[in-house]
Amino acid sequence: MATTETRTHQNYIAGEWVDAASGETFDSTSPADGELIGTFPRSGAEDVDRAVAAAKEAFAEWRLVPAPKRGEVLFRFAQLVTDNKVELTDLMTHEMGKVKAEAGGDVQEAIDMSFYMGGEGRRLFGQTTPSELRDKFQMSVRMPIGVIGVITPWNFPIAIPSWKIAPALVAGNTVVFKPASDTPALGQRFVELLDEAGVPKGVVNIVHGGGGAVGDRLVRHPDVPVITLTGSRDTGVKVLEAAADRLKHVHLELGGKNAIIVMDDADLDLALDGILWSAFGTSGQRCTATSRVIVHESVYDRLAARLVDRAEAMRLGPGWEDDTDVGPVINGAALEKIHSYTQIGRDDGATLLTGGEIADEGDLAKGFYYRPTLFGDVEPGMRIAQEEIFGPTLSLIRFRDEADAIRISNGIRYGLSSSIFTRDVNRAFRAMRDLEAGITYINAGTIGAEVHLPFGGTKETGNGHREAGQAALDVFTEWKSVYVDYSGTLQRAQIDNA
Ligand code: UN1
Image 1 (cartoon, helix red, strand yellow):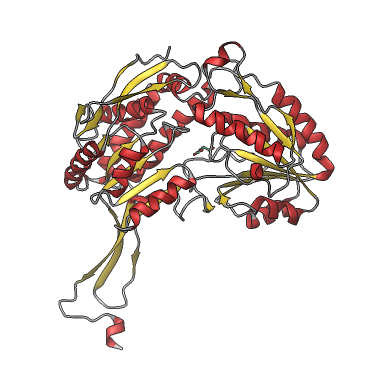
Image 2 (image 1 turned 120 degrees about the vertical axis):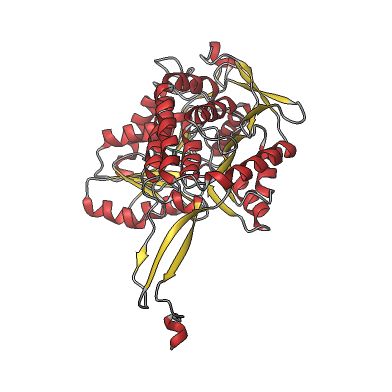
């Protein structure tokens, strides 16, 4: 059993815990063993409208709270998450399924992000510049925008809400939060802790339910000027379309098809560890996960053999058990999708080296487990090398020369994370320049981004924004340029005096 008692939950709107207007509910169950985690309101447009109205009203006051004070709320929140880290970690192993060490990492990321963004309360730097004219002062300041619609995925159920909600709040915005319907209990705990940290009524509201009913209303609501979404590419396109008519700001963090390049001069032991961690950590369910290894033909056979051995030695099981290496995938539909790609890989002529099966021996049958899967002889254009599978499926692709490797790595629609293992510094710098991705790792796998650098991708991974670090503030603020003329006379701008 999860340590949080199973119970019926409500939405949090205007500082009150309330049922969905319809009175309907849905259950959250564990992907590890089917256990009931909790019951949540199945909300609809009416609930979203109430939450948006509350957030809009709260914005009038929250925007005027001094930013350092807003930051202090985030410091208190970060401390509360720290105090509750063990409980949140355990709940995550049950509700989302990732293994204990990674669940702790997910929670830690929220702690780090909240401390980092809390500090922004005393920065939120703008610029001052000299004026073209005498007796005139000018500066730019970051202004909050209003109600932010926050739509988050299940794969980082505590970290990703913090990436969006912490910068939104410190900048003076208010929030309507729709957590993934696969991980509502974690979204709920996140908001309970924000409330405990002293976020005023209406500043953060949570509305549970599906993307169709809750997400869509949020995206179309006239009083929600900003939408931030982490999800699939197809959802991103739909959100952009739905938000276009009102010219909303839409921040999208979408898919990946990330590759590790292994050069002939690589430290193979290190590369092996980096590949296994990045491909099978979180059961491959990170948008930064490695799903392609582009390996020099001279080391291909050696690497493939060792990967097979190590993948076969990985133990599948519930995330809360200490000796589990790979936890379940999120639900039955994901399991089916992942398994369908094994057939697609075979049909396209790749060689299945290991895995390719649903694991259902003993208690595993109660959950959604897939064996770490490795395909060899993969061609760069095959579907398993092009499409995001979001599971523990890895493709090995051979290359001959460095330019080919870079071309193959770049030859996808996405551009999130990338990596090269080499001991040659010149090669490393060329890769840093030429890999088309928002993130490049040298001698490390594709996962593990830190909270204080920009996070996001090029091409169809997003629409040009970044979260985390200073870059996140650009999503949640608008620049205002302020000119103060203290000459006492009408001074025309230089262009108007020409
Ligand atoms: C994601 O999978 O959506 O870089 C985020 C990483 C983590 C975040 C992943 N810090 O792997």
